[in-house]
Figure 1 (tube, rainbow, N blue to C red):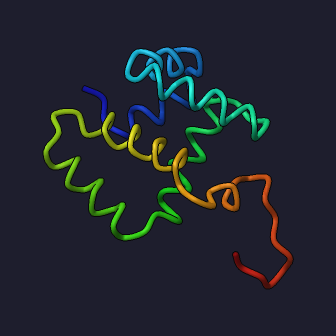
Figure 2: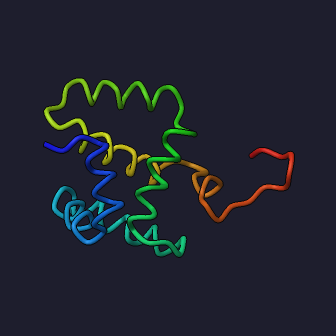
Length: 110
């Protein structure tokens, strides 16, 4: 059972095997990631990394509470955490404003 840090390290080191892991863990989510990544002109791995970063920076307290509860009740917290963060980014309203391609004028905030 990999932990979140193990999964992210695998994503940095072995892109092909990480993509295969996501496909095996949740084929439907993997397909959604592929589409979303293509629409942002990034790789699927880049999208997943952005999902983790965006969740860490922008997820509201309620989403953190839900994630924490899910982790506490799970036998595989690394997988639960990563899948939840990716799902959050796919469904978060306004997440395109947090993408790597969105730029704000100096001194402004979304």
